[in-house]
Length: 136
Image (cartoon, rainbow, N blue to C red; front, side):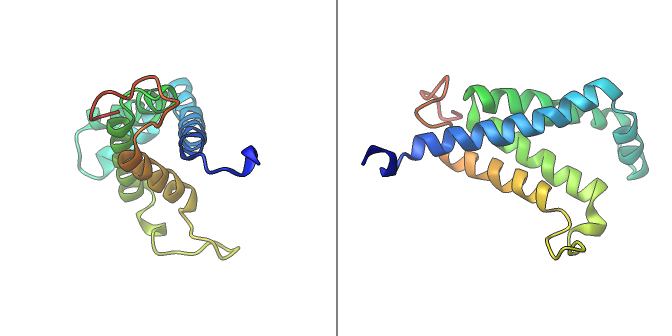
């Protein structure tokens, strides 16, 4: 039966669209409201304020590349770094914490991070805009 045959490339496409679209929504919200809150967090951590604008790279540009399947591996790496920065600056108190329902307190961020990391290793798959370069 064709439906039950393994299709790794379809799985990679679903992963790309899932994390790409869902993170892009976070990025669009930041485009609408601005990077002010992120800038406060960055400055509060003793870093230069311009670093806050990296959120647009990690939450808008990288997800668009992941969705399209162009430069998927490098976009996944940028996305993963964005997750690490978010975890260390905004969620560091929750990294070793469980939520009231017993899940990891930063599980959404963890899913984004590990999904992006998976794309660093797999690339965009057969259903990607580009598959000919090392960074795809």
